[in-house]
Amino acid sequence: MESDRESARIVLDFRPEDVHSVNDRLRRAGPLVPVELEGVRVWAAARYSTLQAVLTHPDLSRDIRHWSEEGRRALDPGGSLAQIVRDTSMVNAEGAEHRRLRGPLARAFSPRHVRGLRPGIEKAAATLVDRLAQLPPGPVDLRREFAYPLPSEVIADLLDIPAERRPELYEHGRVTATTRDGRRRIADARAGRRAVLTEVVAERRGAPGDDLISELIALEGDRLTADEVIDTIETLFVAGHVTTVNLITNAVRALLSSPGQLRLLRSGERPWDAAVEEALRVHSPIGLFPMRYAVRDLRIDGVPVRKGEAVLACYAAAGRDPERYGPRAARFEVSAAPPSHLSFGQGAHYCLGAPLARLQTGIALAALFEAFPDMAPAEPLDRLGGLDTVIAVSTRTLPVLLGRRAR
Ligand code: HEM
Image (cartoon, rainbow, N blue to C red; front, side, top):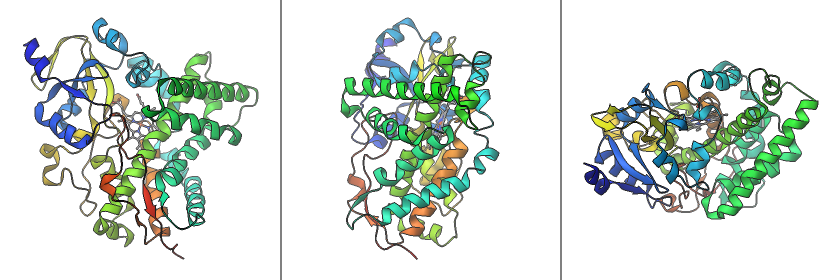
């Protein structure tokens, strides 16, 4: 049994040539598949129904204390997995602890409150579109000039990060988002980001305002420790923009590759939100997310999982599962009502920022495609290099020719 499992183990490369062919292989290999990632041996849940079972299983916990000694020993302390599984925010908490950490944010990220952010986000998108229109003619990297700055500014506004601290934070974010920059630089950038956020919190303590950081500081001592306030802000800052940058990039790329679908959106026959949902499903910005641990011996879709073993949630693979989505599984189609997906998770850890991510991506697509009706790829879209990680799925650049600006 053990040797069968080892011979079937698939090694997930942090620089995959083609994420989706790896995902097809994972889905075909079985409901739960033994994989190795950064030297760690875990189970991968790549089929839609298996992923759903994993996300809602009462005996799979995000709490690292349930991981076997052997699993934890294999974790590379400087690697990208360690960064996520050792995070002490709500992401890895369960039960009452999870409610204590997530509860204070429920109002700020509720659909109702987020709807009120629309005018500010539309203004930020319009400013970026104006800036794009002023660039000299020639190829423009939309990822850098549009997809990146919009969510960064939106989350920085929500947290009320002072304008003069933002460039430094964005630069740290740029470094941490790529493994090409080398471990030392990434570790320094993470430390730098933490230092800036710690200073911003210290300043805000002396001058509280009507913002999320001040709300969290008000809970210090009573509900949250000082470290947890910083951890929560760091999680919001990182989760709040990196994924949305990738979603906007992926959605724009999908639309530039499907002129027929784009026409339906431009003519108003289909809403921009349909493109957002379809991009989430077919081009999930999260490839896979670590980690859930079995708190006892259990079975998932017939596969025995032993107490202390870990399971990876493979979001990008589940979004294209033909068993769930049939012949349209890998096709980007806004023409029919987009089917539901798991790309924001499900259950207690369902993405806190889903309403915000949906709103800003819808606004971003409408602003961009309405302003530049002739926009076209500046390079073949299927040859753009991917991110060098299996956790996030997107391209490193998105070169386009903007064309004339609509009046
Ligand atoms: C396109 C954009 C986004 C995608 C695809 C996305 C996806 C996800 C997914 C899949 C999870 C669950 C992970 C798991 O447990 O396996 C998650 C959790 C989370 N997301 Fe997002 N996210 C996005 C944007 C955002 C934004 C804008 C924010 C905040 C401003 C945010 C904050 C969070 C937080 C705090 C959690 C942890 C929730 C918990 O553990 O209770 N996300 N997200």
